[in-house]
Length: 130
Image (tube, rainbow, N blue to C red; front, side, top):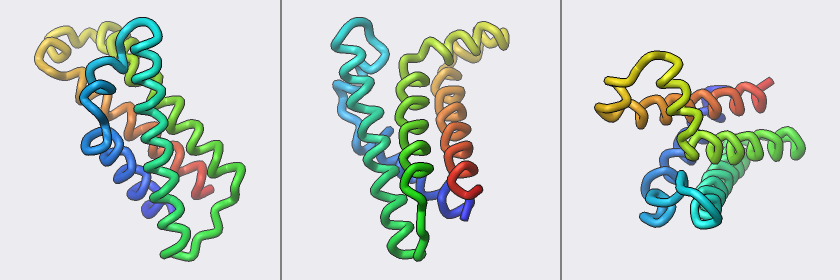
């Protein structure tokens, strides 16, 4: 069940991060103040909804019986970690700590960002499969 769950969560992530993310969310989700926090929360909510929809589809098609509380906990984890990662401060801190300024200057932050998201999804899928 891990592989199927992870794949569905990853597809949900891709949908929410690319075709379902608005230009406003992309431009402001890491920004200061209410505007930034609102864009960030809205974007993270889209992730939760996309992942919930795909988990529901997986349950329907594959005959899963996902327990409600662990599923809600996994979705909360996805929304929370996605919001924290997209504020970009953790990624910038990691890249400073890992001594990656040249990588950061040449677009590396986007790769580290996506790696952090995939790690969070893998942990959610492991939790649901356990």
